[in-house]
Length: 101
Image (tube, rainbow, N blue to C red; front, side, top):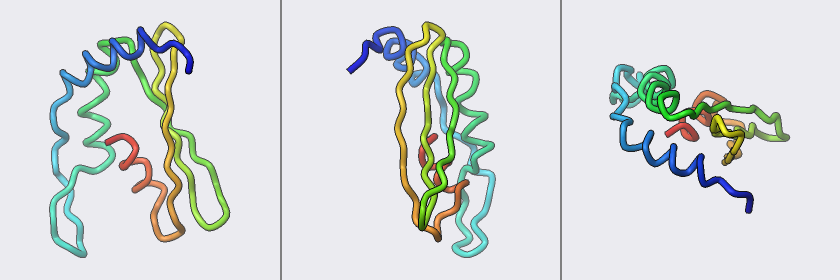
């Protein structure tokens, strides 16, 4: 495993600063409120940037679904990533939301 000392320290600080995303969207099927991707992005962007972090999401087209990989990047060049594979019935947007949360 590569050294992610700077990234880990910054991520701990950023996580402490992140507040809950606004649940400003309504699921028309279940009629429940949820935080959409824009609200989640708004909640995390400043704390990440203030600590020298950013993220990118890479979409992988797969047979029978989609894969989404989230890459967290520190200003030192250190990175870490995580991914999820979704089935056909799960949208790319839902996968992106899942990984950001």
